[in-house]
Image 1 (cartoon, rainbow, N blue to C red):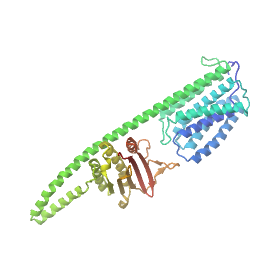
Image 2 (image 1 turned 30 degrees about the vertical axis):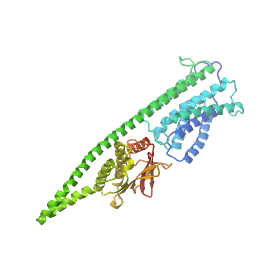
Image 3 (image 1 turned 180 degrees about the horizontal axis):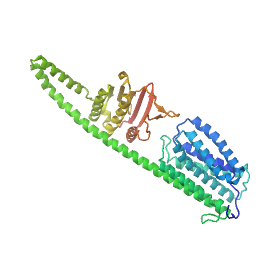
Image 4 (image 1 turned 90 degrees about the vertical axis):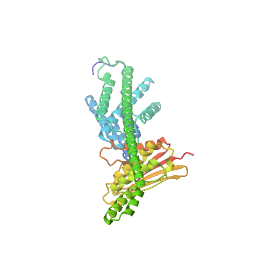
Length: 442
């Protein structure tokens, strides 16, 4: 070291540092989306505490040159705790670990600054009474505040995969924060170093706080950008579904004109005396009737168009679509929302069912009915492949790129919530079911 710190304070006990690093990991395990069972998370947490204490004890008895390696080992252990306790990807684990490391440094430094300011002598690892109570109080308050703050920035139901640039930026901020906050312990002969014991810890705490604030702002910006991208994608899909509806309505109207012409064709066939011409005419008439039979009459013209269009798509893929729907229950819903809700739901069902090799199993069922004061929409399709689930039982997309899909389901959930309702998904006994519950207006 270069220079001497006046009235140097005792170093933070290693066990306190270990507890702070472990608690920081627990905070993030509580706020992020875990893909493993709670039992695995609890076992990882229990083992992780013992691991962090062992590493800090080893770092404490090792020579001074081992210090940097010891901090890297502690960081790697935090990375292992978060990754094993959550089941998230390596990149996301690295991103979360960097944030947890800065949080741990901040809380440990703040506690020790308060403890030394209070005039307590904390040179031993096992300190009874007031010192332990102060440790418990400061750690409990700080990590509870951190949990309350971070839960707003992360979803415990959706995976957040940071970009490579965001991860690199987070690591850079963490390294800079750690280096600047500990600079005074390396050398006091710099413009950014302190020379007095309490001052050194004040600088360390303040730098750690700034680093944590920057990381929080970064995550807030990434979350806002992700939400904006999703909303833009949902809006685009809404527009696409509405355009499809308008096109389908024109097709249905053309079928209506075709029905009007049928009576004239029947009269012409009755007057036809050539058997060959009559046979050809009857075949053409049969095709026209088949097209007309696909039209749906639910009581809601928008739903009629959607179902008629999807029925034709199902016929091309040899899919049996059974629909029992009281369209009048949708009178209070806008045409765009109806088109998006049923269009997305049936498109997903058709896409999944068309992959089945056995045409007899290509089955889709739609039900729209009232139950007490609730409008129930249930869309079901048969499946025979294994669905991806995490260890908590939550369904995951079967597509390779998990983060570029799922906007259709999000659109359905968004519309349901917009009308004060909810959406649930269940896969059981080879039937994939999407259920939407909407309150009925009196």
